[in-house]
Amino acid sequence: MKKIECEVCGSQRLVKEAGRFICQACGVEYSLPELQSQIIDSPIERNQRLFKRAKDLFRAREYEAARQLYQRLAERGDLSAEFYEKLCEAHLEPLRKDCRSAILTSFQHSLENLWNRDPDRYFKQASQMLGEIIVFGLTVEEIYEEEFQSKAARLESTSMQTLKKEHEKMQEGAGAAWLLMDQAAHLCAETAGDLSKASSYFWELVDAILDDLSINQKRGTIALGDVQEERKYFAKLKDGAKETEEVN
Ligand SMILES: [Zn+2]
Image (cartoon, rainbow, N blue to C red; front, top):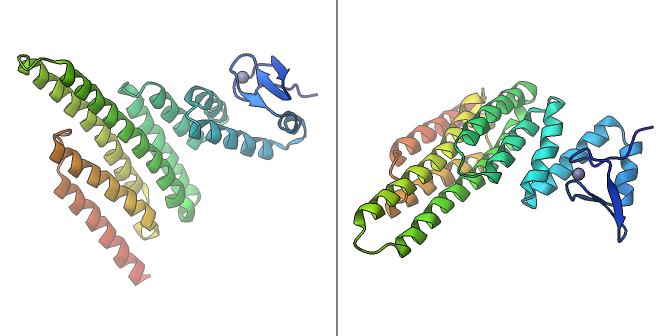
C-alpha cells in the first residue's frame, strides 16, 4: 500500500494538531480528506492536485514550499513546472542574476512545447507565465529603487560621488529586470507560429512592459532601452497578426 507522505517535501513525519496534519519537515498542512485522496486518486488526479497545491503555495508567496513541489513535478518531465520552479528560485533570491537566465531558458522550452502541443491554447498559458515574469520584474525594479532611496536618504550632500554610483547601480539593476520582461515578451511572440491567435490580454501585457520602461526612463530609474523602437517592433507584429486574421 502506498505510504502517506508530505507531497511537498516527501517526509512521512506528519503529526496531527487541532484536526490538521502538519508536516514536521516543511510545515505544510493537510486535512484528513487531502491525505486520504493520496491513496484513492488516480495518477492524473494526483498530478492535478499537486499542481493546484503548488499554485496555491506560489500565490501565498510560500516560495520555498512551492519550489520543492514544482521541482517534484518537473522531475516527472513537466516543462511548465520547471518554469515555475525557476521562478520560485528567483523570488527567493530576487537579486541573483543567474536565476533570470534560467527563467528565460525554461520559459522558452515551455513555450515551444505549448505551441507544438496546442497552438489554440498557447497564448492563454504563455500570457499567464509572462504575467508572472512581469510581477517578478517589477518586484526587482522596486527593490533596487527602494535600496537607492534609503541610501540616498542616509548619505550626506557631500558624498555626491557615492550617490552617483548608487544611482548607476539602481539603473543597472532595474534595467536588467526590465530587460527580463522584454525578452520574455519577445520569446512569447517569436515562438508563436501564428500571431493572429494572440489574445488582447497578451498585447496588454506587452503594453504594460513598454509603459513601465517609459515611466522609469522619465523618472531616471532606468537608462537602457529604446521605447519607441520597441513600440514600433510590437506594433508591426500586431498589425501583421491582424492582416493574417483578415485573410483567414
Ligand atoms: Zn513536508
